[in-house]
Image 1 (cartoon, helix red, strand yellow):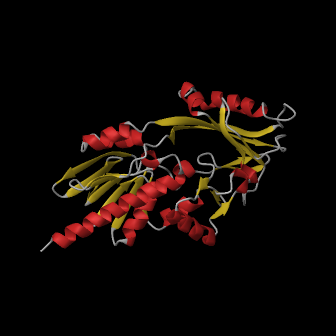
Image 2 (cartoon, helix red, strand yellow):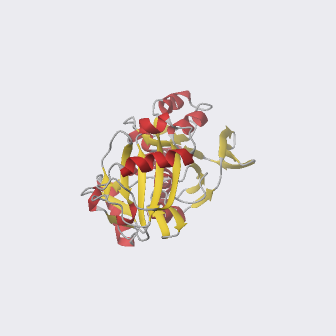
Image 3 (cartoon, helix red, strand yellow):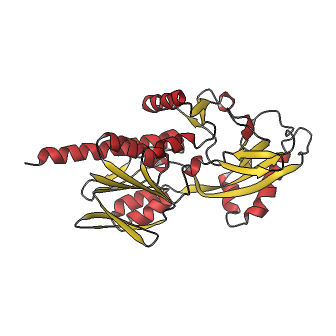
Length: 321
């Protein structure tokens, strides 16, 4: 069986892992330049040295037994480590947040830099259209992308699935990345949520991080939505000012770097729904937007869809004469 998965984040790669284990051939298409997605890490050269920013997901939890087993494998491989500062069950990728995604992607045929414009189906199967190229045919198509993007592709093939996706709206998130020449006068390594800051953390305090004093400052969804179309250069100083309000001295040391990144589809609320699957069309969808806003739930959604696909494939084979 040949399968196409649109999106090579945690959900898409978890789906691919399980399907390949069932003997399938999987090709993943992702618009990113490399592994990471919302578990990305950005490195910046500054006068104070190379600064590292986990500017997407800050950490992840491992509560489900199956995911705990997967995390234990990552820990044995040295690509994740616990971060007690964020909670007793908090984990981070090491030496950067995208380490687990990078390791998962290395085991698959992932086409990075592919901007998928559509999927289409004919008598031969599914075809993926991207960057003036059409690839296929594939026996199965899976969408492992944010709900807002999935709904547009699903609407041409399964209206019920598209309607489900439209109910799972995401909130945006502006994220500032600030490096300093000295330590910021804030005692804890992360800050609680407030009216402006949804999360802020001293990135260089995470396990196996190095480099200058570096902070990731993520705004709340409402604050980000109100400023969604502003320029990054205008947003970054506002989030820096919010960080300064938490300084014990009321001051911040000299900057070595300041930038901002806009996540349009950052914080899904989740709709407590299993993966979407149309066995007649061989079309599915998975992602954290179906279960909840956690890395762990993205992994579970992708895995559960793969189990459903494999079960249907086995049933179809059993029915053949």
